[in-house]
Image (cartoon, rainbow, N blue to C red):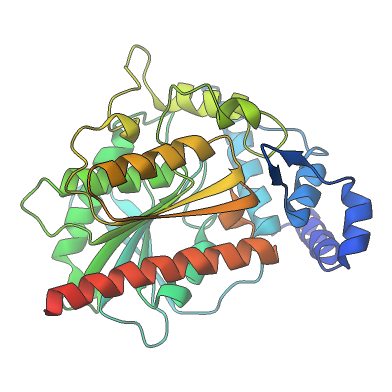
Length: 352
């Protein structure tokens, strides 16, 4: 962490620890939209973010490098105190390109494994940007967590990331003893772009003759790429993830001429969800992707899938990385416990 990042991080932590009346004076009047009120910590973060020049995804190599560095830096500032638990770096897949991964092992972990795919619009993010989130999920669920890094767009557009997570999952099944697992309950998870990858993987595996995930955790998933209505318009600007940012990510990820209603790009258009595993779907009230997350949860339910929809009305897209905020920490704990319950349910069903 650079000196500038450390200074910003310390200043932010000081602000968030102030009494609420003082934070309210700094943040300004409450922001209310669509019957919701923005969480006070989130309002402070949103206000501070407006002081920074936004760095968008781009096909231009120089701008792409700058935007990736800015994304990584922003996460380091807001990621909060690291949970201490053993973590081991490794590589997945039997042939190149090999995929970096990181295995987290909480104390007293059960025979359970969660594969996690990070967000960042398929352009940004890596194992380090989501390290603390994975540590918290491991601690709360008491499952081993294996974070998997996939190849990024625009250098590697769709369907590369989908192919990568499929290759990674199959390789993991072959290496379970290496990870200290016997006959684990398995789940998949991800946030935003990673949430889409997780549910696409879960759907595809459910139709294969292979051990498939018993549960999925989808944190503010991207489910309907062409959508331009509802929450996409209502929260189009001013709440960290913007409509312009979403468009830039889509341009980088989806090849020109490709119908982005393909179910592996927009899971909401899938017609074979009936064998998908039970899901915890997480949405944030002030998120442009909120409505498509809600709609995807509803579609899973319409296909007979057990779904728990957790909506955190005052939070924004990306809150699972903003673990310096008590509100975000509580939300991550709640989603982790919901996933743990699904995994325990799967283990009990298997024992019957």
